[in-house]
Image (cartoon, one colour):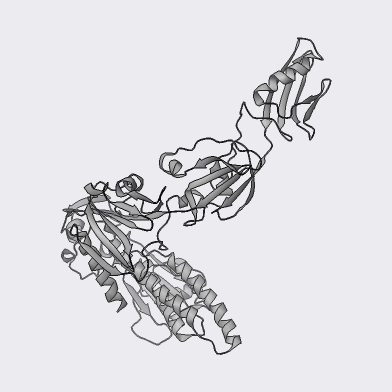
Length: 537
């Protein structure tokens, strides 16, 4: 039933793209905004890359403070060289010259101030050079919508990016990238919009003072952007609304874009309407709305990528309707090309596999969190088990399916029509068998004719205690998957060939048989779709 609803919604969304000025409404069961797969523009900015570099720069107007280090060189009739720290009374001490008061002396006056003191002791045959070698670090408060509010050390010449990064960045969806204030004595001395840096690399210099406060204001308004754009993110608005034309300069639309779909909430429903791109200046976007940019053209060609062992082109543009046979017949293979095991990967299949996996994980999460317990002891066990299952779910969500279409050796490749974005992979001939998963020593073994699946597993140290012996997968070189139950006696054990892989899945240890079944199915789904083995717990 759920799959039928998803297919119906997909059909409705495609129908919206096919015509202009057509309105469609769908019941709003769950907001399309702020999904776990959508990121905020600028979210990638704070990953620790600004915390290490130091921006010590000479500033002629800088006023010297206690703890600053001054490098002094004297030569001629008297010689001296040293790094002198301004003490808590504001002085430095030069032997045979005495104490010199430098607190609040400007950087540009440092040379003349020291020369004046030197001339009181020596004649004109003594010369001096001085510069500030190191500023005393200052402390800046970072507050508001950041992950770690606190007091952070730095230099007066450091940028606001460095202090924000030390606070581990702005909280996505909470803090604003466009409304950041620097406060000094409770007064705003500077307003910062980080979009100027993100879009244009522009960040005006600012010199901090001890006790300044960087305040990240709350995010006020945002819109979601997706479709044929280089930046499919959630964008923060400077004000309460903006035009679609204004958003275009942020999102890097593809040259083929000629339409957009405006989605907004009306009551408890989402209303979507398609417009030609020429009306971008007329349509206004408000808080929480979505715009999807589309290229509603009939594609007369398909872009195909060819990877693996061959000697031809890596990228082809073929007429729409071209078959896999047509492309393979024009590829120049090498002596090492394993033509019989050619693989085909498709983005739409990978997307479907990911959606099915996420649906299964969502059902597992709901079941793990709603399972009842009859006693307090059982409730404690359930709680610990639920925590382990949720950790497993988070790891499983990060898996990326390959989107492989398995091609059998008897299949007529003339009937396999290529789509835009397809990848054809030509494997290299191999004399190895890969064994991975729950075995003693996962390894690559030399192929031996007529050796059984169980023999290869034994050669890798046999099954571990966590191995699910009833769920062993033999992945053929062409991507075909054969499941084998090694606990039952059978004369029909699958034949292992050169280039194959053996995946031993892990056993699921839970108190709930339904949860065990669900997790086992998910592990199988991941192994088949992504060709990797992960542990249940």
